[in-house]
Image 1 (tube, one colour):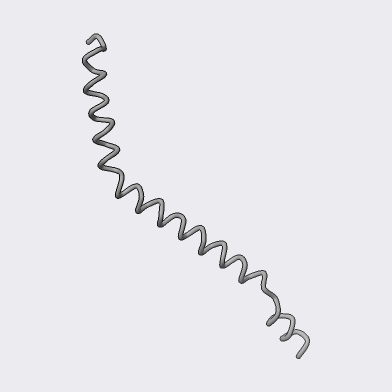
Image 2: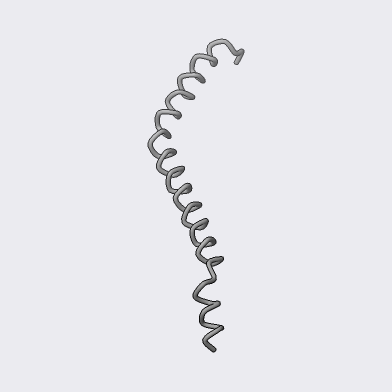
Length: 59
């Protein structure tokens, strides 16, 4: 029984999996924040580009 407890205590595979999960979660949060902060600015750029190009295209 003691051997089983020692093996369970020294096993670090689950800890690595949790660390990878936390890293993926952090990357997702950073992406969401970046899209929210830059979303309106990017929308403005594409709107201006559409207006400029709209004058050159036939209706």
